[in-house]
Amino acid sequence: MFDEIKFNRVDNLPKYVFAEINDIKIKLKKEGQEVIDFSMGNPDGDTPEHIVDALVKSARTSGTHGYSPSQGIPEVLDAIASWYKRRYGVTLDTKTQTIATIGSKDGYSHMAYAITNPGDVAVVPTPTYPIHAYSFILAGGVVEDLKLVFDEHYNIDEDKFFEDLENIFKFAHVKPKYVLVNFPHNPTSATVTSDFYVRLVAMAKRERFYIISDIAYGDISFGGYKTPSIMEVDGALDVAVESFTLSKSYNMAGWRIGFFVGNKKLIGALTKLKSWLDYGMFTPIQVAAATALNGSIDCVNEITEKYNHRQDKFIEEFEKIGWNIKRNKASMFIWTKIPQCVQHLGSLEFSKKLLSEEGVAMSPGVGFGHDGEGWVRIALIEDDERIAKAALKVQKFLKQYEDGDK
Ligand SMILES: Cc1ncc(COP(=O)(O)O)c(C=O)c1O
Image 1 (tube, helix red, strand yellow):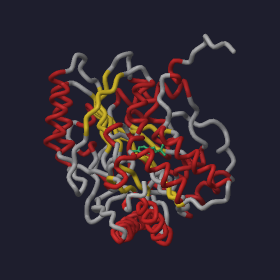
Image 2 (spheres, rainbow, N blue to C red):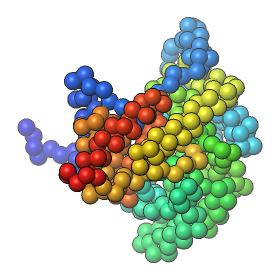
Image 3 (spheres, protein in one colour):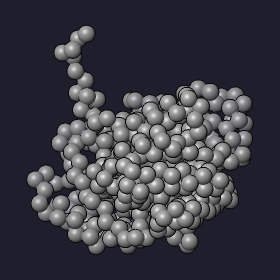
């Protein structure tokens, strides 16, 4: 009915590639089959007890059940500012330079909605966490891809990044207004040095663009690598905002709380838009988030160590079956090329077949854009025993291709 009535915005969205994997997962689970699931960056652990206790205590306190300010309660904004001060030595004005968001994904969609005029160009490195690009596209903007180049240890080739970015500006019909960066990077886990941000801030001032930086995996780094923040760079507050989330390193993905900090004009735009669209999150969630950010980082270290250990375990078990993977320095993911014998399938077909036939779920690289074709992203959300079991299932799956049966 009413076929002439179209919804251009959603009609023009491509099919969400990961939905195909999810559909198979749901079907297998319905049939009672086991799924070893490496597909989603959805931490498997529980939120640390002291954070849950803070939520419960606040929920039992009178006066916490009504609407809360859409920018965030003062307690959580103070905690965000203290976190930046302690961690990165950066001073933020809570009223104008911080905002709590309903997860950082909400922050991205609303930030882009707030700041994008029709036809505005945003540069987004590829492959990419889909909302980084689609937030701008949904808001009426245009995305210019910048292909990420990194070495076998997942270090970004920073010179190449700037060479490509300079070229985009040199040849652009419409000069980009925004450059989005996300390191440690989802899906590739690639990292940058702090010098990268010094160069990026300098270039932003010269070419007159804003930077949006996502450090969702900033806590999860290994072997002495510490995730730098763009906010550490002198003058960054003039040109940049940065987001973080409690989803990953505090096991709080279902709670939906993250935040943005930085440039007053961008934070102001998001704050104004959200004051029209949202009320604040349930106060006890914000109180608990403040407890997390102000509290001991022992729980974060424990969670980080778990991912560190699982990465070793995954590499070890998969090496035994001939799938060689190099170590990365950060994030909860492994980004790896699918073996040669199944390259012809492409990453989506490979992931669908592996899941349907052996019950092992991985995210197809093509879901992160065409530059992800031929790769898969593995989220380290299964324990040692299931990692070892998955390796044997993958071995069985690959054997039919190695033997030339298919
Ligand atoms: C790079 C990156 N940014 C942001 C998010 C969104 O996190 P949340 O909305 O849970 O804060 C994710 C989730 O996977 C992510 O990988």
